[in-house]
Image 1 (cartoon, rainbow, N blue to C red):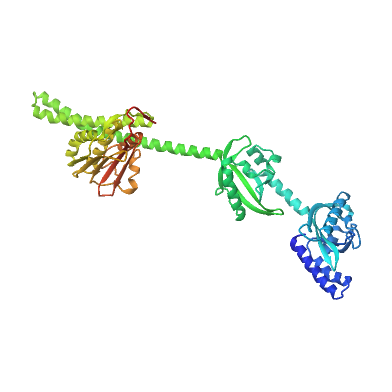
Image 2 (tube, rainbow, N blue to C red; image 1 turned 90 degrees about the vertical axis):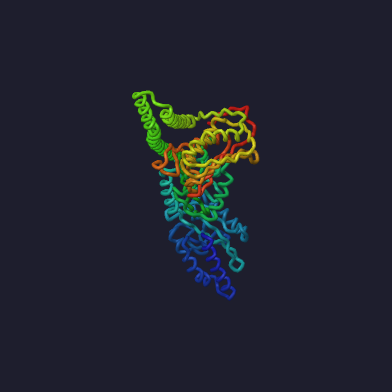
Length: 520
């Protein structure tokens, strides 16, 4: 009998008590209370201290039929099989003994008897009641057959479910697990039932999961697969796997429970990683094709005029010995083109070394002020041809442990970029020491770099402008970043479109001249 039913019966008897105080006899009380009892959904009897039925509801007559105990004056013990009579008698005595307090109402399961002694599963609820000082027990019998049939069908569905499925009670204990759950976690069903759900989660996640579970119990909601909880799960053998969990709250006779469906994501994760690798491979192939196209163009660009100069010289020698004044400019042009090809080949070699993890630094004590001055002097001709006026702002010696060839390469790249992207504009190079770091800055007043491109241009094959208008592989700044980071430093650009750009290199100044480091 539910608490609301018991309250309804209690109110009815309170009314009867009040009527009795006014002189109404018991038969009148029964006439008053009988309809109330008949309105109850479950089979209900009023039992006296002798264990006899004083009042039987219509639902009880329909459920028990002509079974002894279902009529007024008969012993209520006749409503249950012999093996449950001692149980029912003891529960009735306990209800009368604890007529008040929290232990007054008692519930238990047993079997009932229909006409012809046919058994059925039953839930019995016993509740005490006082009527003008006389004690009674209201006994309610609920036929569990429909519930058990529904539960059996449900268990069939649970057993046949293709995913691991568990019922978890409000205390976090597993109350039901299907064969897929046994297979997934490696525990038998007997081991799983009664286990705390956190035992199936790695130790490092148990405390936060308990907090999440407690929060979920306060605000239960359906959380379908695909937007569910994704976390590592733990098998009996100690191995972990990635699990996706969907949750559904369900109200049971024992309170709120949660249905948890657990899906092993191992294969999906593998497939996802495979898709990512495939995508990366396709991107790499696309980048390789684009790079080869650019590389072939860049290598051909100086070779064509170089060939023309060679042919011109051959023609000049064919007509006689040319003057030095005619030969020298052509030789200087040829030298410049060969140097350009050499730089392109060096870049290709650097890409190969960096990609293979073979970029080796040969550190020695280096004065950056002197090194940068030498690079600037060597690059001055390139800047002059671009119409760029070069200014140096170099402090006294800035000494540290660096690979001089690699730092030379970085500064040369930045100066070549300034000549390329800021033709006809002044270029300023600064070297200074600040709080244990060396700082090299190359500032131009060229086209600048948009904020959204300022990180991207240091990636491989990236540029802020079209290669149609500006040559190069789109690798110079990427190579520079690899070299600077191999030294433990950093490189970045400060710029606004149309207002020029300042490329900054910071390198640590700690003495590491005794080391030769391979950056992998």
